[in-house]
Image 1 (cartoon, one colour):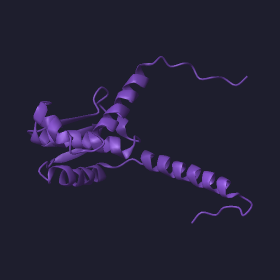
Image 2 (spheres, one colour):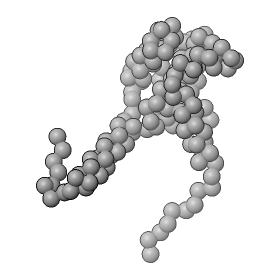
Image 3 (tube, one colour):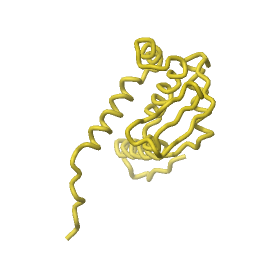
Length: 148
Protein backbone atom coordinates (compact mmCIF):
# COMPACT_ATOMS: atom_id res chain seq x y z
CA UNK A 1 0.00 0.00 0.00
CA UNK A 2 1.20 3.50 -0.81
CA UNK A 3 -0.03 6.51 1.15
CA UNK A 4 -0.26 9.78 -0.74
CA UNK A 5 -1.24 13.17 0.69
CA UNK A 6 -4.80 14.15 -0.29
CA UNK A 7 -3.58 17.57 -1.48
CA UNK A 8 -1.65 16.01 -4.39
CA UNK A 9 -3.10 16.53 -7.85
CA UNK A 10 -3.62 13.54 -10.11
CA UNK A 11 -0.51 14.52 -12.11
CA UNK A 12 1.59 14.82 -8.92
CA UNK A 13 0.24 11.49 -7.71
CA UNK A 14 1.22 9.80 -10.98
CA UNK A 15 4.67 11.37 -10.88
CA UNK A 16 5.15 10.20 -7.27
CA UNK A 17 4.05 6.66 -8.12
CA UNK A 18 6.50 6.58 -11.05
CA UNK A 19 9.34 7.84 -8.84
CA UNK A 20 8.62 5.17 -6.23
CA UNK A 21 8.37 2.41 -8.86
CA UNK A 22 11.74 3.50 -10.27
CA UNK A 23 13.26 3.37 -6.77
CA UNK A 24 11.88 -0.12 -6.17
CA UNK A 25 13.20 -1.32 -9.53
CA UNK A 26 16.65 0.10 -8.72
CA UNK A 27 16.67 -1.63 -5.33
CA UNK A 28 15.64 -4.94 -6.90
CA UNK A 29 18.36 -4.72 -9.56
CA UNK A 30 20.97 -4.22 -6.81
CA UNK A 31 19.88 -7.29 -4.85
CA UNK A 32 22.71 -9.80 -5.05
CA UNK A 33 21.86 -13.40 -5.75
CA UNK A 34 23.78 -16.02 -3.85
CA UNK A 35 25.36 -18.98 -5.65
CA UNK A 36 22.40 -21.24 -4.81
CA UNK A 37 19.94 -18.72 -6.28
CA UNK A 38 22.21 -18.31 -9.30
CA UNK A 39 22.14 -22.08 -9.86
CA UNK A 40 18.34 -22.15 -9.59
CA UNK A 41 18.11 -19.29 -12.05
CA UNK A 42 20.39 -21.14 -14.50
CA UNK A 43 18.16 -24.23 -14.23
CA UNK A 44 15.04 -22.16 -14.99
CA UNK A 45 16.73 -20.46 -17.95
CA UNK A 46 17.95 -23.80 -19.31
CA UNK A 47 14.43 -25.17 -19.10
CA UNK A 48 12.92 -22.08 -20.68
CA UNK A 49 15.36 -21.61 -23.57
CA UNK A 50 17.00 -25.00 -24.10
CA UNK A 51 14.35 -27.46 -22.96
CA UNK A 52 16.49 -28.31 -19.92
CA UNK A 53 19.31 -29.74 -22.07
CA UNK A 54 22.01 -27.46 -20.60
CA UNK A 55 22.71 -28.87 -17.15
CA UNK A 56 25.56 -27.20 -15.30
CA UNK A 57 27.25 -29.05 -12.46
CA UNK A 58 27.99 -25.72 -10.77
CA UNK A 59 27.16 -22.05 -11.21
CA UNK A 60 28.86 -19.46 -9.05
CA UNK A 61 30.08 -15.89 -8.74
CA UNK A 62 33.83 -15.29 -8.98
CA UNK A 63 35.99 -12.24 -8.31
CA UNK A 64 38.91 -13.14 -10.56
CA UNK A 65 37.25 -12.32 -13.90
CA UNK A 66 37.85 -8.69 -14.72
CA UNK A 67 37.91 -8.91 -18.51
CA UNK A 68 35.14 -11.50 -19.02
CA UNK A 69 31.52 -11.41 -17.90
CA UNK A 70 31.34 -15.16 -17.57
CA UNK A 71 33.09 -18.38 -18.43
CA UNK A 72 32.20 -22.00 -18.88
CA UNK A 73 34.18 -25.23 -18.79
CA UNK A 74 31.95 -27.67 -20.71
CA UNK A 75 34.01 -30.74 -19.73
CA UNK A 76 33.35 -29.99 -16.04
CA UNK A 77 29.92 -28.43 -16.50
CA UNK A 78 31.00 -25.39 -14.51
CA UNK A 79 29.81 -21.84 -15.10
CA UNK A 80 31.36 -18.81 -13.46
CA UNK A 81 29.97 -15.27 -13.59
CA UNK A 82 32.02 -12.18 -12.84
CA UNK A 83 31.07 -10.36 -9.65
CA UNK A 84 30.98 -7.20 -11.81
CA UNK A 85 27.54 -8.33 -13.04
CA UNK A 86 26.10 -8.04 -9.54
CA UNK A 87 23.69 -5.13 -9.44
CA UNK A 88 23.17 -5.04 -13.21
CA UNK A 89 19.64 -5.47 -14.58
CA UNK A 90 18.25 -9.01 -14.39
CA UNK A 91 17.99 -9.35 -18.16
CA UNK A 92 21.75 -8.72 -18.44
CA UNK A 93 22.64 -11.38 -15.85
CA UNK A 94 20.16 -13.73 -17.53
CA UNK A 95 21.81 -13.12 -20.91
CA UNK A 96 25.26 -13.99 -19.55
CA UNK A 97 23.82 -17.11 -17.91
CA UNK A 98 22.07 -18.14 -21.16
CA UNK A 99 25.32 -17.46 -23.05
CA UNK A 100 27.30 -19.72 -20.71
CA UNK A 101 24.55 -22.37 -20.66
CA UNK A 102 24.69 -22.43 -24.47
CA UNK A 103 28.40 -23.29 -24.18
CA UNK A 104 27.42 -26.51 -22.43
CA UNK A 105 25.65 -27.45 -25.67
CA UNK A 106 28.01 -25.84 -28.20
CA UNK A 107 31.54 -25.09 -26.92
CA UNK A 108 32.67 -22.44 -29.45
CA UNK A 109 31.22 -19.22 -30.84
CA UNK A 110 30.28 -20.57 -34.26
CA UNK A 111 26.95 -20.20 -36.08
CA UNK A 112 25.32 -23.02 -34.10
CA UNK A 113 26.16 -21.27 -30.85
CA UNK A 114 24.69 -17.92 -31.95
CA UNK A 115 21.62 -19.71 -33.29
CA UNK A 116 21.01 -21.08 -29.79
CA UNK A 117 21.19 -17.57 -28.34
CA UNK A 118 18.46 -16.37 -30.68
CA UNK A 119 16.03 -18.06 -28.27
CA UNK A 120 16.75 -15.40 -25.63
CA UNK A 121 14.74 -12.32 -26.72
CA UNK A 122 16.94 -9.72 -25.00
CA UNK A 123 20.28 -10.86 -26.41
CA UNK A 124 20.95 -7.70 -28.44
CA UNK A 125 19.76 -5.38 -25.67
CA UNK A 126 21.96 -7.11 -23.06
CA UNK A 127 24.97 -7.14 -25.38
CA UNK A 128 24.47 -3.41 -25.98
CA UNK A 129 24.26 -2.77 -22.24
CA UNK A 130 27.49 -4.68 -21.61
CA UNK A 131 29.23 -2.91 -24.50
CA UNK A 132 28.16 0.41 -22.95
CA UNK A 133 29.62 -0.60 -19.59
CA UNK A 134 32.94 -1.52 -21.24
CA UNK A 135 32.99 1.76 -23.18
CA UNK A 136 32.22 3.79 -20.05
CA UNK A 137 35.03 2.03 -18.18
CA UNK A 138 37.46 3.18 -20.89
CA UNK A 139 36.51 6.85 -20.55
CA UNK A 140 38.84 9.04 -18.54
CA UNK A 141 37.35 9.56 -15.12
CA UNK A 142 37.23 13.13 -13.91
CA UNK A 143 37.97 13.81 -10.26
CA UNK A 144 34.87 14.27 -8.16
CA UNK A 145 33.77 17.88 -7.72
CA UNK A 146 34.64 19.36 -4.34
CA UNK A 147 32.33 21.54 -2.35
CA UNK A 148 33.96 24.86 -1.57
